[in-house]
Image (tube, rainbow, N blue to C red; front, side, top):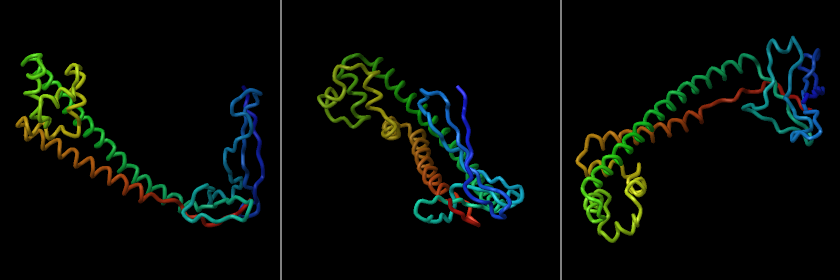
Length: 219
């Protein structure tokens, strides 16, 4: 399958010695699902203007073009570099937050897995009758009666119902009721930090900048 390409003149450049060109491509196969021309975007074909200007689609000060027209935004190279450096710094901070978020997520996942495993061992060792299992799990999960417990677990095995009863939401509470207060506090600190990270990521996103158009043309 070959690619067919086309170029169309859209406007003169700022100095008038070159052009703004829009490039298009299309698959030439008659049965291609994306048959037809697709825009590759606008290009500034002028050596003089490219020394100072670039063309972008999104800017901080978009114009309302005349009816039936589209804007061409010319951005100064210096402004684009400043905005790029600013956003790169935000990106580095966001990357650090993602790494910390992943680390905390793994910590919580492992803690939950260990708790479920220890509870499964405890209830299997103490007996297979549902009342024996309820005596261990009921107080930890705030299930008040054996009937309530039976209604929650039905005829399923512990390895099936434990993941539903012991979750990330009640992880810290169950650890506290087991007397593992230090571990419970670690869980709570991790969850608080995850909330802080989520808020910080939103704040970073709000600080992202777009370059300002120095000149605008329409086509």
